[in-house]
Image (cartoon, rainbow, N blue to C red; front, side):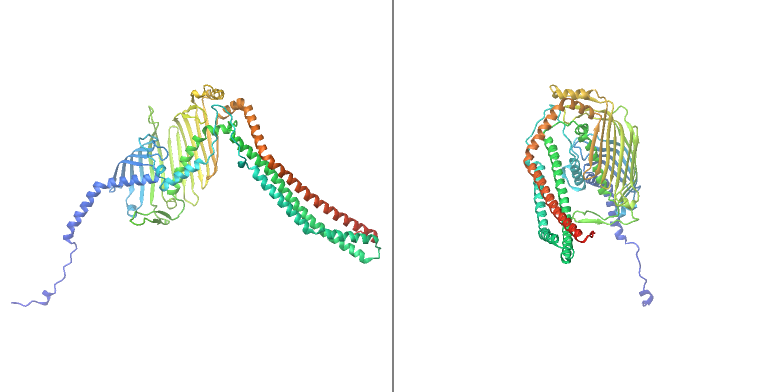
Length: 599
């Protein structure tokens, strides 16, 4: 039996590159993951896309089919439907097919970079069977808040109501408590009393009595004095100096009285302005049909003109929320947890990829799909991103085609965002609508529409135009026994064309709205012809009522203000005259005694 050698006992360790016993379970796990991906990835992606799209737009986003092909970096969407967030049974758009080329590497950083999107078969404004609005019903999320803000913004415009069907002029009760002249008169009366007390106190502080008495006594002694009476002469000179100083104080008081009197006269003018405001308020209670052409245009078309402005503002405000300007931290709601979801705050860094980016999108869509020969249009979108400052270029979109030109520019690169949109669409047939205030229906037919919208920071400039040369008018039985109705019908029924223009300008929180149309002058002229005398008589009666209510308050206040002014000015003039007269007599007596002309 041989003994074991040291070399046989110290064998080199055996290293295993693969753990063959774990390879099998790993392969099984990978196969299961691949099968689950193959079975459920498209479904999960479709549902998440619908969920995110619904939250962002504020209306239901529905997708019939979505297929992921990450091996080739492609995403295919078929049957996309986006409901309108403003209309219950209307779609914002539908698309037959969308093909997206996705950059796969940024997905590892939870960033979605789409190099190109091709959208075919886009359709706009199609009907739907169910209400697809989400933000309007729930009011939750960014879309819900923006929708509520734009609704409140649109409701601030005071649109005049045109009441022409009967032509009756009625007068409601006039509440004196709602007139502005009465409290203005009370306030002015209090100011007059306060001014009188202040001026009286100022007169008392002058203490002119001792100065005048001393100067008068000095004058009496000076009249009996001789040229050699030096003490009396010096006393006269000192009295003159005291009179000059007293006159300076009176001059200062006179200046204050003049300023106060000017303020009181301004208050009287304010009473006249307040009465004019009360006239306007009472005129509103009269329910008078407006005879001004701009007011007629605003009453007829302002409600319809505000609607496109509201909708464009809604989408631009959404863009500002999802595409914030500059490099600022962004807080988003965190993932759902058992206790508190919290917020995720993302701090963007320069020279970094944005979280979402569509480099280029090519669109193909149809308008007037129900026509015999629907027209095909093409559009292009560049640089749609969630981080404009990181991308470094503004978002640009355009669309062209027969009788169509549209453009969009979203410049959110700096601290003040600038959004510009414009479109001209021809040959669009608008549905007939009821003209507000009168039983008339207007069918504009095939019309040309122009929309321009510029939002620079918080300053808005917008313009909306509708032009049609094939207008049809219809009236109902409400005009049968109405003189004004017949006049309005004769005024507009012979007008074959329609030209309406609405403009917005000013600060976003309170812009000015101006609406005009080619119907304004025609309707206003007819109204003036039949209602001119009635309106004048009603306005005269209204002014008389206002005057009767404010007369007892304004008359005494006006008299009080005048009396206070006259008393103060008369007292100042009287004291100044006494000072001047005494100074003149003292100086004259000194000249007589010394034969020296005082400077």
